[in-house]
Image (tube, rainbow, N blue to C red; front, side):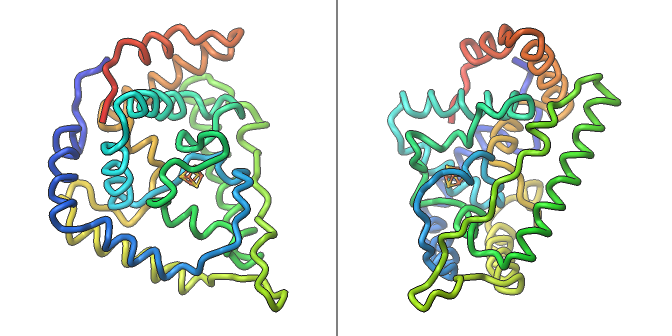
Length: 253
Ligand code: SF4
């Protein structure tokens, strides 16, 4: 495993979780979430194909919940988070690591992005899909040009259909418009600004898995590792580097 050289270290996250408990951050995040109307999600887990994108303050909030889980669960999740981060671009077989038996195991601290799924106006959802396709095209080009890795089209072009279940009693769709969504996002950002160290503040969300992996790996090392793991996987489904890493790295929370 590479030497830890990250913007926020594992030890610092541990300290921040302690402070977050004292400051009742979980309750404050929850109050922000309560502005999102409860939806009629049927837990089909289709959306959970991708790891959730989270604000740094949500990362900390979920991390806190993971620390309260039994050690064996933590060990299993730590491996799944890294496995997902290193390999998900090469296969459709991996889902969000928090999805277990079609249930979200961080349900109570489910990130905003997941709470909003299904509540987008149709046009907004279509625009998000266009953005996501374009981001995946850029990603595929980056890996092809710089690392000679061809990311499979079936993964890069995979799309999750918009949920059709959010229908209210009057038959109208339950939607949350762009302004309302931005308002809730900005509150999470503001809470992060208030509470998190400067080097960890960001108005952008990033996947939980990438934020977790960056606690252990420098960003460049992480790309190199992904390239190695994906190339092995693409030559006959081999997982030598990945399995060795998962069994010896001492990943933890
Ligand atoms: S955090 Fe939970 S709801 Fe969100 S994608 Fe993962 S499993 Fe699904």
